[in-house]
Length: 87
Image (cartoon, rainbow, N blue to C red; front, side, top):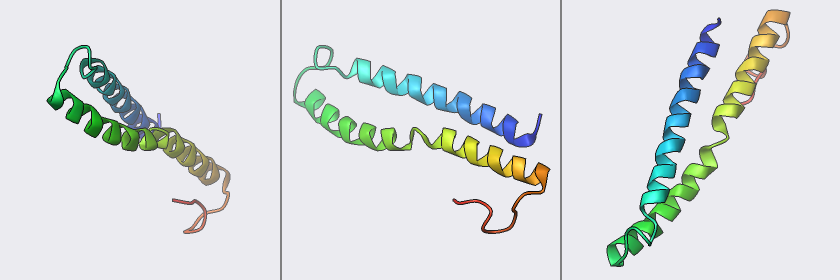
């Protein structure tokens, strides 16, 4: 197994753990569970942070695809150098 595959497995495992944590926060901050002004403030702030977190969700898949492309290019002697991939 190549080094990047091992790294991606670790990243995927961490991403899954983060997703489970986000879902737990979503479930426990519901207004039926946490009522009142403090809960309202938290939910408002959480909604903003959650939206930002949702924007980064596809990044592990994008990184995996890019690394696979680069590995294939390296193995087949394809393009290399600073313009071979986009970051």
